[in-house]
Length: 312
Image (cartoon, rainbow, N blue to C red; front, side):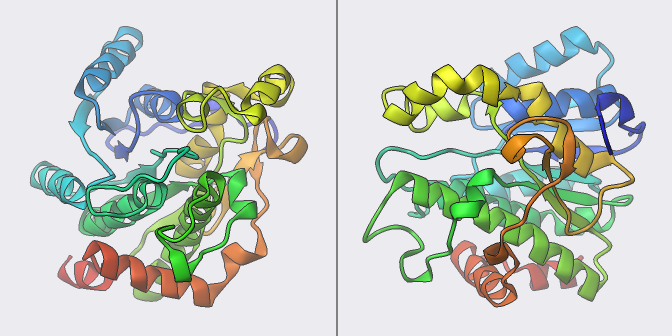
């Protein structure tokens, strides 16, 4: 795996990929490289203008790319269901699902259309519902994979079942850490259930390290002390969005990637560098918490995996 790069991505002709949050940053870089390898790529996002701009940029570099844009707002379960229905009507199968989109450390508590805390709802519950609704297509995919984007922040995360939506006490980073821990636990639990139920899906996870994207300034803001301090260290500690997307691309395409694997940069504190196996904190491996989170997610979203799987 040492020195793995986009040159190591195998050809993906005939394979279809869906990427959330693909109009910029890590998602855009992931879409670009999957399209370069020959995949049919569905870019999704909330902003149609940004979506069309992303398509134009990719086509400017890859004129023959098989790419489309579809609107998908992960902060709305109805929007997730609408997208899944449109996709199912035109695509009998799905080979790669990259659950990438996220919001980070919103200064004040906000809620989704469904009254979920915004970070937990967008970063995790929206992706849970999307994956469940696309399960029939994934089961028909060729060596299908689901890649969840987690974060170094999962190391400080805990699933607070007593205040899952942070109604009683909201702290921006605590909510973000919980959402990214949930994404990693979801990836591991999905792999476990796929193996038990014979779904034939590989599920793994990745994190970008410290990648220079719009996520940080659009989240906690540039006025915070941590942001102003980090800005001066950024050139030493961080890498580009293109480099940050490499662990995701490895998890999605490499023959060496494993179900239940977690991949990130191999440098100091996993901040930057080429892809390598990443550290999974003990709380992410708590099977009892993962099962409880799965059941609660099904109840909150109204999308139980087992029923979808049975109907496939």
